[in-house]
Length: 366
Image 1 (cartoon, rainbow, N blue to C red):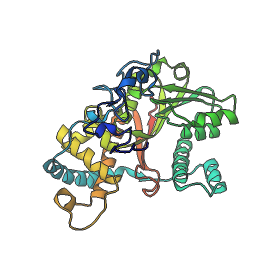
Image 2 (tube, helix red, strand yellow):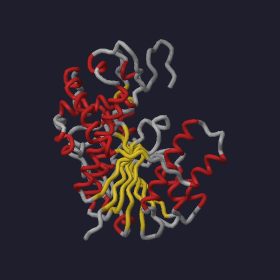
Image 3 (cartoon, rainbow, N blue to C red):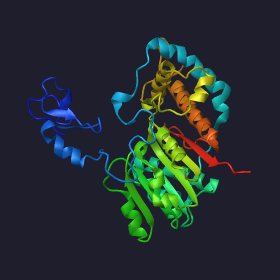
Image 4 (cartoon, one colour):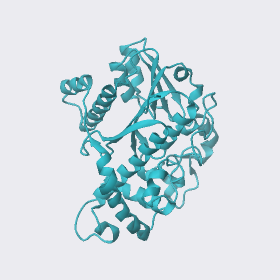
């Protein structure tokens, strides 16, 4: 948005102007602002509003309510608390985590062919497709593609739906349920239907913490269900795992690619048992762990003359290790729910620093 003459901020950021009286933060989502005079009209059309539907049960999959607001990201760690935790992060990774991490980039033939035929794609689009290619490769290798009408793929936080689009191209006979809390323009759903009008793909608008999956007929009527997510933000991943538990449905597999660990919340996080083993299962330690994790993605420069906790170990490496610790905790949580898990570095960090996925396969009942 443009900045009007004489103003310091554009309209979207006028909330930060000390003289502002007209613009307020949206009550539905703290990520955007609105004109106070247009509040009532905006709340009726806001993409982040909770709509009235059978499949919506407020806070069904959360511990303390909404996970999306930045003002509910608990407390910030002090320098002393971070110094206390970085040694634990380093030791935990060395003794346990690095032995559980698997480095394995896979490829899907169809996506790779598209990449080779479209060399002029921008770097961002290429990187997104490299990630999708590896994700699809892992789904294929695990044998959990939704290849028949009795199988269903459920995507949490689908966004524009590009991942679901490519999975549906590889397995066009399955059912596809997409969930995202906001509306989205230029969705890949349209391209999927254009290429295959009889495709069984349906989209629901809802935050995962409010979604009662047992009310979705396509999921209830499926014999096998694969849950997927790509770059599911912060505690949304924990709410997503909780939604699978709460549904009572037979999810035979889940492939989860979390991101934004710095937005995870202590109460919502599900890997407390693992953190307890390493004396990091308290709000002070968790806030430090969460903060350190941000250094894997925040673009901070490595260098000399660093002070405090940054002088103890490489902040970038600490951030990478903190992320891995949080994922191992989630993997152990899934194991306690009856899954066998693998935590995989599925693409190099140059493709995406958010490069860990959790592959969970339901254990066979003996």
